[in-house]
Image 1 (cartoon, rainbow, N blue to C red):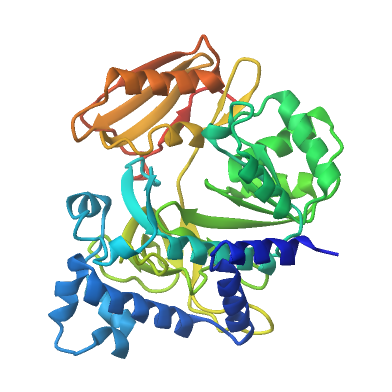
Image 2 (cartoon, rainbow, N blue to C red; image 1 turned 45 degrees about the vertical axis):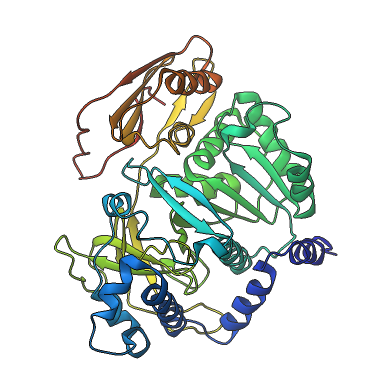
Length: 449
């Protein structure tokens, strides 16, 4: 009996969280055939809020001749608004905030994004509730209900030191039936322990960084370890290449689904049964694919991914140029339990390298991007592993520069995972060269796997 499901949902509701009720709503709407019309409904509500309460969007929306343009055709109304870039957000940070921010529970967030250009955002409690409900719906669609065991091969620099997780956090992990394996620092011994955990817990779902799941699969195969067939694995936080997908599915012996999202807008698309591509949950984001001139491209044609976040009213991101490229498939109709609406045919996403120490400890490149979060002087960045004991930070400065204490902190946290003898250098070029494909790689390892 899955007693965790009613227990954790009831506990969350008692604490004032709305995601249990939202999950029920989304499940009900999914069963009734939620799709493109649902996304248009959510988009109309967001644009209505922007016209009434967000100075940056209010004037362009009011200039329309229609009394309520977002009600008559929200998609056409959306297309008339400018594309939002990271530079626009920095330049108009106050104007992008909702006028009712003082009445909302909110917090700051930041992201390096796929191009290594950090941006600071404001996200409210409603956003957190909605993205949690959407995530739980996604788990259900791939075969894992709320409260069933989950193992997370995830990363947090705050949890590298023993005892850093609070009693409240440990209780919540127990209540929600989650087992957490810190993927930011994986020694051969920790990799073996991870295999033992998977064999012992037999999770209904594994959530993992794509690169870490691949490295674990290679380790199991190389060391000839016994890994019991798993149920399902969802990968994210990096590009899942076909060779990685094949190896992970083979070694884990289970179905594999990929997820595409970002810290700015949370989950954008998720592979689910019955859909060829990445299904875009209609309550979460609305996706456009534009050419370099800002014009929409036909379904199936590659262009720039532009996302309108439907869940964050504190600081709406409307037509946000996320920095990746991809293609939309033709909208699908819901049928036989298959979700409908927008589908990303594919995403040409970011590339994150895994760093290696001399004793073969693996450190996901995401760890180093987290060290640069919430630092307003970071314009663009690239972190390069030059040798086993040499890491180089290349940072384009903005808004002044770092203090010596900040550089010391970044260096110390780098040595925490790379070893006490690791040399940490900082360079501050005026610009960083793009990858030949047109994108920045924001972590690079020059150590052969």
